[in-house]
Image (cartoon, rainbow, N blue to C red):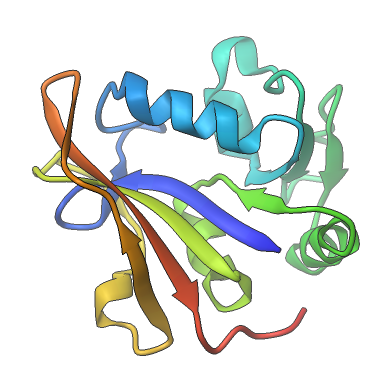
Length: 169
């Protein structure tokens, strides 16, 4: 399966200044637990936003950089969106692949994902970049929504959306 995993504010905002909108320890634990041992696919800026710009532990990383001179240690480097899709397809035949950002990657991958694991934060985070509004997309259906939790002073809900009209890679 191909699965996007992210958090968004109530305006579907997901980031600003190449960073997250909120510090959400519960959501980060969910992210770590869910993606650990799996493949994560991302754009170059997402990799660069990690501590010391290094890959996350215990995951296989597919990183898309349009600049062919940018090749990072410890990751699978690809330099076109078509190559990115093909590498994701190759891995998704064997295991789950998690799309983890940034905004451009999330939005380009929307037609291809099986589902979206979305943590909804009930406030406006002043975002500069936004995710596709799944509630306004007839292809997506919210099939699960948790109770509301307090995560570091923020009200959050864990949701699962399924893509009922997934496009094949």
